[in-house]
Length: 251
Image (cartoon, rainbow, N blue to C red; front, side, top):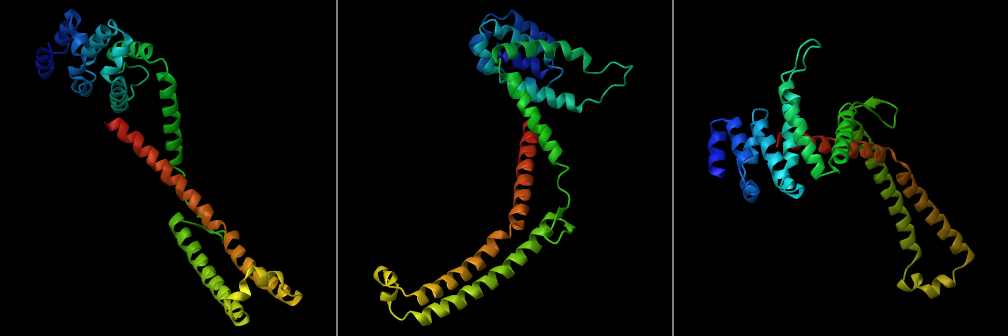
């Protein structure tokens, strides 16, 4: 049976192939061997054959429908429909003769997978968001309130951050030098020694720690780099999602 189906598909005799399937009594036993990929690639001409296959297999139980890779069918139909030109209002579309076959197959698929419409709707919404994001790759605000390319803005902000880091390191190095001059032995930093600290030493330590905190806080408070990185992450994620959808349609 499979050899005869392959032979008919090779010769693009889809209607004869559909008749063969309709008359077969053993199709459900060889469902995994059916050349579904070839048939999907031949949409829309193979729709008559695909309709016969789905109809015949559904008689043996909805559980076998998944063996036909219905999502692949949907991808190929979407791909084909997207390549068809939109007809003028007063003309029939080239799609029209195939609508009934597609509708019948979809009914069988949905009956076998009731959650499929919701799943497809989520994909549609996700794709819609990705398409909207395609237009969100314009200029961004810098910390100087100038509009510029995202990568240029990141370069400017990172240079500022680098300069701040250098200044912070220099300040911390100065504080460390003062600390090294004030503490000569390891015992000076022991817990017991800390409990015996004098008021003057406490005030000095507070000043040093406050200076360190002020230096570090200035870096943490500069959130514009984080803002730009968040934008970059959103753009990367949106493009990854869009690429995923495009690859799905091309499969």
